[in-house]
Length: 318
Image (cartoon, rainbow, N blue to C red; front, side, top):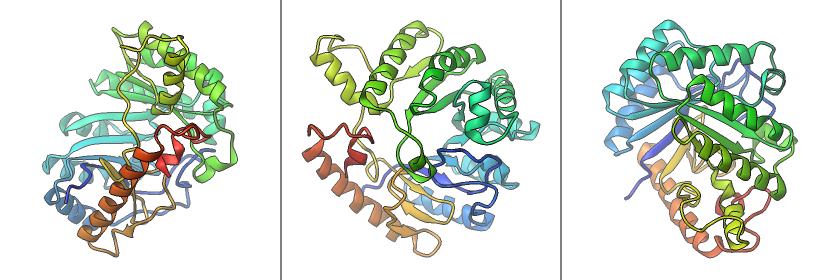
């Protein structure tokens, strides 16, 4: 059985922010997540099953008092480790541990300049704390990815955010168009015109910062880029990063804070099992079956005229 090699694991649903777009509805009353003993057991089982890489997220993973133990254990088992954080909770001990473990990168969210970022995430002062901690991480030599969740309301913020990311010393800047999942269902999404505008902007910044920082063109732009090439706006070679199709259940899968196993963080309703109730083997088998169907479905619909709908990607092949 060829299983996905990368796991996105929300190890807590508790968060110190209340983001308008949160895909899993995290917050102060979120699910606390599995016990440390359960996490350690699952890490060993995942390693035995040949999972290679884990991205820890939440909620806010650094709010778990035992997160350092989890990271240490994952590192001891030789996982490639990524972390997705809001960047506001970071002790000196955390920083020292991050330098020691096998950390691929740490992704930090910045969704606008100070006023918008604090509004979007529900609390004053968050922007200042986040940018300060990004500076601390960069100073310690960590590879920082700055990520922006983009919709119509903050599209105008992106240009200055790319510049800020470069000034802060980030290795990568990534803009991710918001998808209609969780609390994000209540806000707007990028139209094709807006996505085209975002793509043009990022292409320009990619060239501007090519010697200093990687600017990632979102996979959602693949359709727009193909149209731009067809219409003669862009050359056909050397313009964008190689895009993959939807990888849900094929190369990656996710575990939510309540133990639900899903093919992708954006497919909240496609629960195939619960890792805290079912054995890992059953969960992985269900994920692999989803992945097979996903791959076959994309072969049929990838070039469909309806592929570029509001979810930009046919809602992950569905």
